[in-house]
Image (tube, rainbow, N blue to C red; front, top):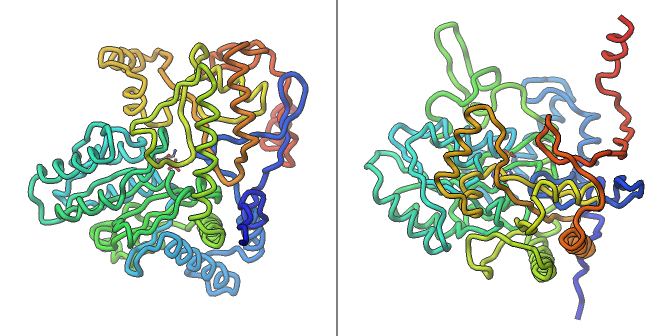
Length: 472
Ligand code: PMP
């Protein structure tokens, strides 16, 4: 029997900065434990290497006759096909490079036909919530189970006013707060049975499990390169070209046109029509390389290994006495590698500061750009939600309820999980071993004093201006 070697530690999936050492407040140093992949992931070494090589050939794309322009254009268009293939998008789908998921969803929101209504859950990330507020939208309560989610979408779509064009169900692929993987295929089928389309916000899904747009019948997919190990500022919107080429483009400017007079514009075909301005060639190529790298590792394997790690983490963390884990669906439901929790007795924001300052562990804390979902998970009632809203409107800074989140990625090991579990155990028993104060400027806890020097980076940004300002 041959055993398949683990992807962890493989050269193929090596991450830039995996061995970075960070200072602790007590003067010691530690290998940084990154448990914040869901917010943003480090670059794959293959991506950084490709970017370095591309810079040699970097030039304007599409309209340049120069040899470097031809090379850069080939790389840019190659990236489009790498992304298409990674998500198994249909050959007819438009693949539009954007800045990130937020940009992609706003772009789609701007192209909805007149009369098209959107159905979306209240528990979505703000990126898949706020853009719909300028369309006809019906927000659905956070469902108690996947079956309820499917049923809610069915009922909501049937209740929408008749329209010549399809309506749209906009759903997350995996929650950035609770990690549950949503029943995309079933939701897509319900949407299609009811004459609607589906958008999947794949920001948290794509880095963790295989996504097959054809098999899952996904009409539109939005995602961010910086969560897929390509943090160079590009994201993508993939989907049916009809809405994207009807009407005026989201952004108007150079590159999106065939011909312009002072009175008239002939817009270009897709994808150029929705990529006005000079595109982010480096970001797009980085994203394409990340897709190719992950495809050659096999997303099934990535998912399987992460699943094992998550099961281990859940068991290990459940043993920490004060650990309160949040979820919306039954514990056995499949999820991506992230856990949102509170440690009873320690504020979530203080906890994040302590983990960083005393243990060299980076996590995320707060409301994770999903305020409605967090209010529900933390059982904030309506009067309290209204009080927070009024106080914030009045310019006060009320302390918002929140939680801590750890999230896994390609570089996460069992040792990392052990380290965070041990740290949480120690904090819940002994409390912080340093002093902290709430900063008036950031509203965040900071070690007081904080003796950790920032790293000596090769760039001295703004120093020239400071020096010349001082001498003036
Ligand atoms: N959707 C989900 C589920 C997310 O987790 C995020 C980022 N946290 C976004 C959308 C927005 O991604 P970006 O900030 O890259 O636009």
